[in-house]
Each structure stands twice: as structure tokens, then as C-alpha cells.
Image (cartoon, rainbow, N blue to C red; front, side, top):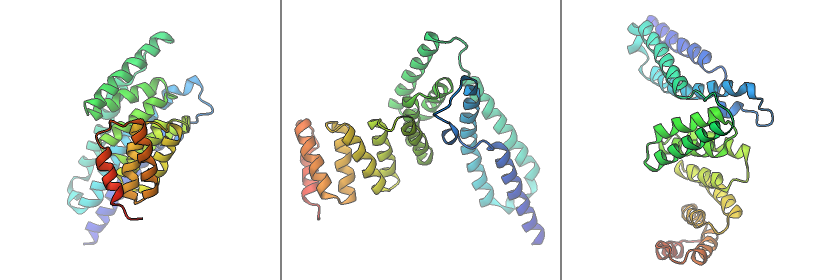
Length: 262
């Protein structure tokens, strides 16, 4: 029994050591300094993006180690060799696909636009993993691209990776706090995880910045109904009815609001 417990502790300690070594720089989205971004740090930003991806993989492996515990005792050595080689393979894969082009200026901008277009098409096709790679490539070349972070947040949301969706979208807001689309998307993420207070807060900000946007108004009504905020739902409904009278959902939304209790 004592031997089993000791071996299990060694597994956990080895896992922690590996995680510390692998994630010593933590996340790209937490470390970017938007005030000082010299050109020579671009390569480091790409490495940080890769590490963010590796971090997500290792967190999954760490949780499995804690769950299986003792059954893994006999294969500890092979197991960590396996993790190490998988990590190297993943990093090489991202390095190969995320290399920034050598040309500058217009050529670089054309590449960014092409990648953005491809990524947005992949989002429409719900190919979120492939879309994620496109936006990471964009960020490796243009780490101040707000739309790339916003779209990266959408890809994480599509994969139900809400933690990293919030991280990406919050960084987009750090670059531009007046981006109404990012506020809306953050509201949608918080709605999905059941944090209706934050959801309604962010969508209200989006509506304040773009008061006649039917998509934002529709979202605000939906969240207000869930939040049991009848006043906000009524106000948003009146505006939606005025700016988009042909909306097919109006009658159903009106019925849901009328059935709300204050």
C-alpha cells in the first residue's frame, strides 16, 4: 500500500515538473504587452502561441494522470517519454504551419488577408480546429490584429473551450475596448457557461455602442428573458421591432416577454 502511494506521488510530481518546464512562459494572451511591441519580439509571440496550445493538451493529460493514478505505475517511464515525443511533434507541426513569410509590406498583408478569409470560411463551415490554426498564423504575423483574436475566440467557442474563448476575446478588448462585436461575443460565451450577470453586462455594452444592430438586440432580449430582466427585455424588444420589423421571431419574443413575471 505504501509503495503504491509513493509511486502515485512520484507520478504526480513528475507531471508537475513537466508542466512547469513546458509552460514557464504561461499564455500568449496573458503576456502580450500592447504598449511596447518591438519587431524582434514577434518570434517570441509565435512561440507563446504554440505554448498556449501545448498547455491545453498537457492540462488534459494532467487531469487523466490524477484520475488513473495507481494503474499507471508500471508504465511511468514509457508514459512520460510518450508525452515528451507528442509534445515535440505538436510543436513541430505548429512551427511548420505557422512560419511567417519573409516578405514584408504588401505581400505580408496579402497573406494575412488570405488567412483571415480562409479562417472565416472555416468558421462558417464549423471547421473550428482548422480555423483556429489560420488565426494563430495571422497572430504570429500580426499580433495586434484584433479581428484575429476575436475570430480565435469564436473557434474556441465552437469547440466548447470556453476558458480560452474568454481569454482570446478579453485580449481583443485589451487592444480595442470599443469593439462592439467582441463585447457581443463575450456575452454569448458567458451565456453558454451560465454566467448571466456577465452575459447581460457585455451584450448591453455591445448594444450601447451599436444600438440598432438587430443581432445584438435579439441576443439582449434572449439573455434578458433568461435573466428574468423584463424591463431590459421590453426596451430591447421595442427597439428591435422598430429597426427590424420583418424579424420572424418578433411574435414569439413578445409572447415570452409578456409571460415574464417581474
